[in-house]
Length: 400
Image (cartoon, rainbow, N blue to C red; front, side, top):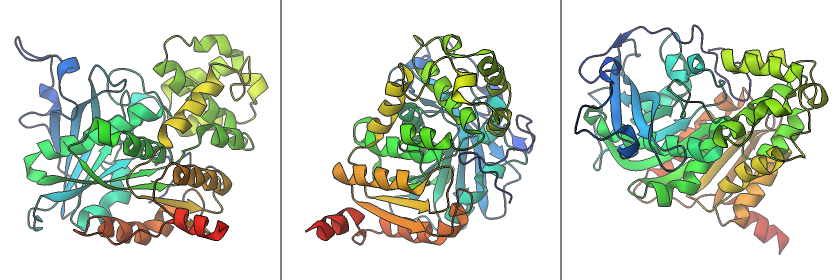
């Protein structure tokens, strides 16, 4: 599989076209307005399964469903969110307490609905990296995030809505009885998805207390949004990332009039962002600068600077044991930025296993770290997990 590195983008060829799907009872075609006497979506419990479609072209030994489920981007009213749920074949034994669940957060694909991973062509193209986990016996969920592939707008790079979508996807998996999914969950995210799962880890105890979060895995995580956006300006396409982050804040806060902060060139890029996927946005921004795209510097001026910092601060909380995987040659999420993220997580009391890969960049980190990820996840799901190699404790010992 060819991986296009745009803050974790997996190319979604032919996005938006449907096929190889059996709607069946409860399929998306039946996902209409509730009948009289039925609860409105805003009243539905988060994680409620709204629709399901069998993906008939799943690889041997893997069952797949394209789903919609309820989530709460703002923590209040519910909205439908789309995604994919994968489970092992029927012949794989089910452990006591149900199958373990890995809830995955994907990297950047954009804000246009056709860029949602669940709409990828061929079907499941965006799920390939998770197949080893399914073949190891786990149920895997892949959320599209709220507003991506469903009504509304995607608040890209806004942490809390992403985190709730990740947690609610794990809840939705339990509603598909064929998966035999239990309550034990590991959260795994890549790039933008690293931000999402760290947000989920920070929110889990209060938002989804019925789930047992056994660990968090953040691969090349977009965790320090301000620092990453600043370092991305060294790249020719850095303005594209900054514009996406500005869009996310404007979606999350309707008081922000985005047009007020855009030059004619910025408005041109905004049109691309609203109609194309992320790789086309960043490519279109090559040659632009902060000064040619925006009327103010979003990295230093309100309302954006404070909003970016808030996304970082909201995920730097104490959470379940966390594995951070980082490539030293990553020019998108840079290693010194991730070093700072690990330090902040340690300061909040999170146990962090930090593994760096000297030859890995933003794309190759996935394959380079996969064996370590698989082993770590398996350990976290053991009845009595072994002690995590805590970089925080090692750092404290080194200072004494």
